[in-house]
Structures are given as C-alpha cells and as structure tokens.
Image (cartoon, rainbow, N blue to C red; front, side, top):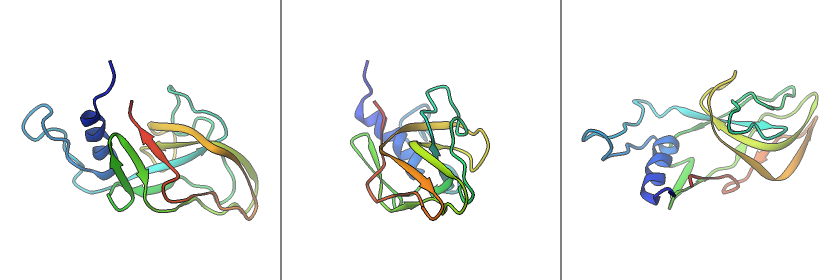
Length: 146
C-alpha cells in the first residue's frame, strides 16, 4: 500500500511546522509541541542508512555543528506530501580540516547519536576545506513521505 497524501501532509506538517495533526485517535489528534522547537540538519560522508542515527557517517571539521532549524512555516513549506526549505541554510565555516559531503540528514538532537528522521544524497557531493561554509540555498532540500 502507498501513503495517502493527506496522511503524508499531516505527518510532515507536524514534524516541520509543529502543526497539530487532527482526526487521529481522540478529537485532538496528534498535538504539536508546546514550544516550536527545532529539528537538526547534519552532513554525512556516506549514507547513514535506514538503521543509522544522526552520528552515523557524520562529517567533522573545526567549525562544524548540526544546524538547528525552527519548526515553522517561515522555515519550511509543505504541499502535497513534500516539504521544502524556504530560507538559505548555512552550516558553520570550516576553519581547520576537511570533509566530503554526500548526504544530508534531519534529526532530533543538536549533538550525539540522536534519532535520524530523514536522510538523502545531496545532488552534487561537496568537498569542504578551510574557508568553505556548507550551504543549501532556498528550495534546495526536499523531503517526501512515500
């Protein structure tokens, strides 16, 4: 069975925009958090895989940290089961070290093993070295539930 668009919309809106997902369970459905909160983007040197966590194949360089992105409709748009970033997403400037980025992840924690919710290959692998600030332009990241 495939996923119905209304089900995908509800899940994505709850995760990315902290929007209540009504009509599931009791009358209130699945509730958003009491505060907006953030999800955390991570960069990876290889596919973290379906069984991986946020630190699986995560890159490392001086200046790198996971990127906190607010769960709001200012940061993310959602339509027909697809979420897209609305704003440019800038990771920390590499001051020392290097890394090869092949995948991006979206998870629950600012550091450590955290739950990896989504991951996927970047359209063009990126070499990071001193002076480079990894960046995703607006509309460069999309998440789909199928």
